[in-house]
Image (cartoon, rainbow over the protein chains, first blue to last red):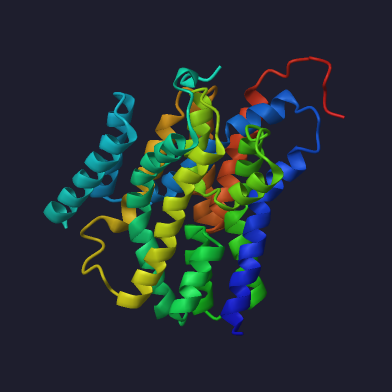
Length: 99
Length: 242
């Protein structure tokens, strides 16, 4: 088997360990400290933000406008789908106009 | 207890509810699945290896990083380490969501954790937030379409090569950030949401500029999580840290 094959298998095993491991470690503790609990509750916003922020920083006018429109739609209570589709449409439109 | 308990949710309807939730995720991830397949072949992977990577690692960002490093002839162990570094955030997902899966069998948990990708985690957490609880049927209804499409896209991307004439004009490279922004916003009712988002954003941008690409995710996330833990009042319910 090729080097690529073994890189993939090793990467897959380690990735699975990260997905199962957090729970396996935490479930060994009968009580969870409130700070740990609060930290875990912050996980979704914290992680997802790191996937957006650098992309926003690198973005040009079209990208930033698209994100801004998505932000406003979310704040107005629009659901995921309307926000996503409108924001994507704005991006495509502006890239054609500006690009 | 759950908001929809009057409906006595059955396995299949819960599964279909999960499938419906998966639609925007599948749409948002599709360009990346295809792009991965295309880039994999360009970086010297066979079609089989491209499909194998999507099917076994099943984590887009780390797959792209792996490809990139392989193309640069980096030592194999360093590539594996980088894949691990990019995916380390899943430890947090697993610890977070695992608290809500105590009613699953050990086998269900073993299977379920394999599918714990970013949107899977985010959608599951939102269900918890709505007080609905995470059933195994719903979870797999959400996860299986995302998985099957992701693996199929690697094959399509590898097979047809440049299937998309101008990915940039179609905004393909920017759909995931938009999708992730939507997810960030959906958690805005949580305690300390704004400070956590601001700190994570600043930390990840600084790390992106200084340390470099895969690491900014872990560094930014840890900064936000740490802040969340610090801001919380440490209730003295007699269970202080050992």
